[in-house]
Length: 176
Image 1 (cartoon, rainbow, N blue to C red):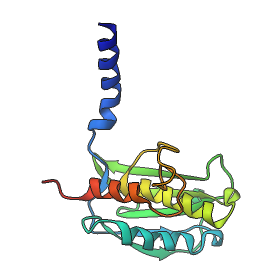
Image 2: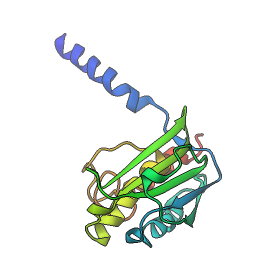
Image 3: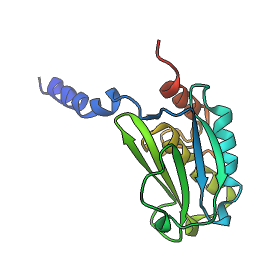
């Protein structure tokens, strides 16, 4: 009896994540507006190319735009609809962080913050950008180190792995 009650409680606690519809973009194309410092030059743009190559056709195409360097705290706080904003911070307790603004299950804007102080090397930086872009494009939540060899968001790959590709297809492919 107690075992059944504990199992039922676990199911109820996990149900919101398991049953919730994924949060996705509705646009056909998304602007990736890169305000980051020169330290990240080429990393964000390269990851946009990686994502466009791996995402299913039903996913919005990412359109990269290099913007004038502007720190995250200096950006206009009002949402830029249909955009992934990428910016840098000079310090912080995180390597990267993504904020997702959504209306129901539709993403309307994301902001990717990259920590200049924790840019350790190019491989680490590409993993960070890939990890944050997975949040920005698919709305996936963090589950660190769950898939170290098949994912950049739940693992340590520098580019999208087989798990990331499968996850993106799962959330964007038309349901039959």
